Image 1 (cartoon, rainbow, N blue to C red):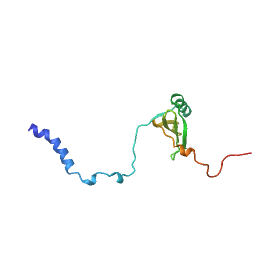
Image 2: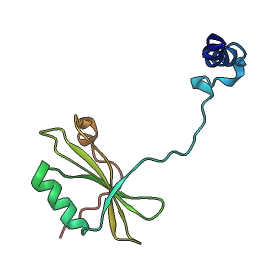
Image 3: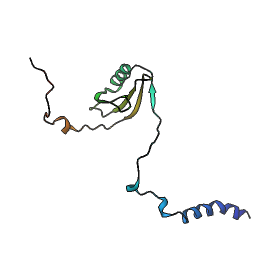
Image 4: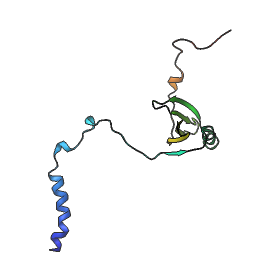
Length: 126
């Protein structure tokens, strides 16, 4: 009897595997967009203080910033010499700054910086 009780969990797993329909698996080309949640650390410190702290501790400076669709300010700061990078998001309604991502091995696409000027010049001359 003991042997039968010990075998029940194994038989249950084998039954699930053996009778799983092939349609239950999602192939990579069939994946769809979905929402996900991840823990994000935020601070109530003023945004200028947050940026100064990253400059002092990691030598990170602003590389790019934009206004997000939800009205938040997003800025990518980094240090091209050491390769550290941080993505910050400022939420005006709460005056909080959130650390969306921090990492290393920053690579900057230098061909973007070398592109010729196109469009209408915004430089004023007198």
